[in-house]
Amino acid sequence: MRAVGYGSGLVSGRRARPAQQPMMQSNRQLRYHLTTFGCQMNEHDSERMKGMLESLGYAEADRRSEADLILFNTCSIRETADSRFIAHLGEARRLKRESPERVVGVGGCWAQSVKEEVFERFPFVDVAFGPGQVNKLAEFLTSDSLTAQGYFEFEGFTGRLPARRERPFQGWVQISVGCNCACSYCIVPSTRGREVSRPLAELVAEVEAMAVDGVKEVTLLGQNVNSYGRDLPSGPSPAVAAAAGRREGASFAELLRLLDGIDGIERIRYTSPHPKDMREDVVRAHAELASVCEHIHLPLQSSSSRILKAMRRTYDRARYMDRVAMIREHVPDASLSTDIIVGFPGETDEDFEETLEVVEEVVYDSAFTFMFSPRRGTEAAEITAGLVEHPIKVQRMARLLELVQRGARERAQRFVGRTLEVLVEGPSRTDPDRLRGRTRHNKVVNFAGLACAGELTDVEILAATSQTLAGEERLLARAAV
Ligand code: SAH
Ligand code: SF4
Ligand code: F3S
Image 1 (cartoon, protein in one colour):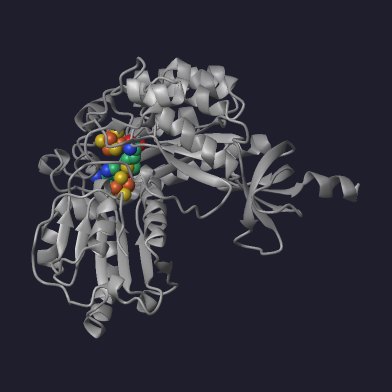
Image 2: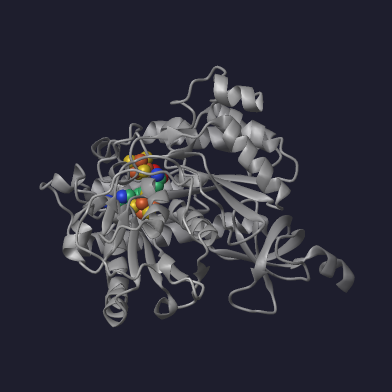
C-alpha cells in the first residue's frame, strides 16, 4: 500500500533500519500506539496523526507492547515536559530491543528543538519529525527506504490531514500555525516556526463539514489566534475565493462572525490569544455572537512592567488592565483565565508583589501557573544576572496559587443558584453515577442527570469550588418538586 497526497521532500539518510518494514506485514493489521505530551495544539496534531495512520490501514493499540509503531508527540515548553517524555522513551527502547522490526517515531516540539540530535541521543529512534512535518510520517512508513529519517522543515498544516476526533461533538480547528512573537522565555517560535494563517474559505468549509458531522463545539487553535489573518491577503484571492465565493483573509473577529453563522455550531472557543491583539472587535464578538463562549484566556505572565519588558511581551501592566476593563465592560459575566510565570530572571520580591496585586484585582476564574524554566535557544536562557533560586520560586508559586484559588472560589460563587447550559462530556470522573460537562464559561460541572454525552442540557448549580461546579439537571430538579 502506498499513501498519496501527503507530499514529498527532504530525506536525510542515516543508519539502516531493520528490513522488515511495517507496511510489508500485510497478513495482519498493523497497530500504532501514540503518546501525546503538551498543549491542545499537540492534541490536535495527534488526532490528525491518528487519522492519517488509520487512512494508511493502521489500528490503535491499547498498549505500547502491542504496537508495531510506537509514536510520541512531544512538548518542550519547560524542562519538566522534556523529562516526562524521556522517561517514557525507556520502554520504547526495551520493546525495540525485543523486536527490532518495530518502528519508533518521535514527533512534535521536542523533536523539532533538537532535530538530528534525536538520533545521536536515542539511536533506536527510526523517524523524527517536527510539528510542521507530520505528513512526512506517512511518507516514511510507505517508503522503501531502509534508513532512519528526520523531517524538520516548516510546511503545511496538520489541520489538512484526515481527522479522527476523540469526541464526536467537539472538534479542534487549526486556524494558524507558528508564532511571530518573541517572548524571551519561549521555545515555541523555534519549534513551530513563523506564523501562517489558513485561508478563511478553507476554515469555513472545515467547520461546515464538522457541523454536518455532528460537532457542536469548536475550539480554534493557534499560538496567537487573535492575530489570525494578518499574513493573508484581505482582498479576494482568485483561487480560494472563486471556489468558495469568499475572501482569502479576514480579521480574527470576522472569522468568529462567519463561523458563528454556521448552523449546528453551538459553541466557539479559541486558544491562545495574546493580550496585545485582544481588540474591541474580538471582545464584542463574545457579547454579540450567540456561539462565542463567555470565556477569555488572557495570558498575563507577570504584572511587573519591567519584567514584562524583559519577557518581550509588548504590553505593560496598564495596557493589560485596560484589556481586562474592556472585557468586563462588554461581557461582565465572562470568565477570565490566565497564564503566569514565577521566577523569571531578575524578578524581585517587588516585581512578584505586583503580580499578586493584579491577580487580586482581576480575580481570575482560573490560572495556569509555571515556574520559569530556561529553554535552549531562547533569549531568557542566556540571562545570568538575577536568577531566582528554586526555593524562592517554590515559595512564590505557593503564595500565587493560594491567591488564585481564593479568587477562583469567590468568582465561582456567582454561578450558585443559576441554571447554566452544559455540554455533557460523559460520566463524572469522581462518581460514575453522575455526569460531567462544561458550561459556556469553561467551568467543569459534575451533576445528577440523565442526558447523554454530546447533549446540551440545563443544569441548576448548587455548589461551587475553585475548580468545579456541582448541580442537578433541570428536568430532574423539576421532577423532584
Ligand atoms: N501561545 C500561547 C501558549 C504558550 S505556552 C500563549 O502565548 O499564550 C503556554 C504557557 O507556558 C505560556 O503562556 C507561559 O506562561 C508558559 N511558558 C512558556 N515558556 C515557559 C518557560 N520557559 N518557563 C515557564 N513557563 C513557560
Ligand atoms: Fe510563546 Fe509568546 Fe508566542 Fe505564546 S505568544 S507562543 S508565549 S512566543
Ligand atoms: Fe509544548 Fe509545543 Fe505546545 S512546546 S506547549 S507542544 S506548542
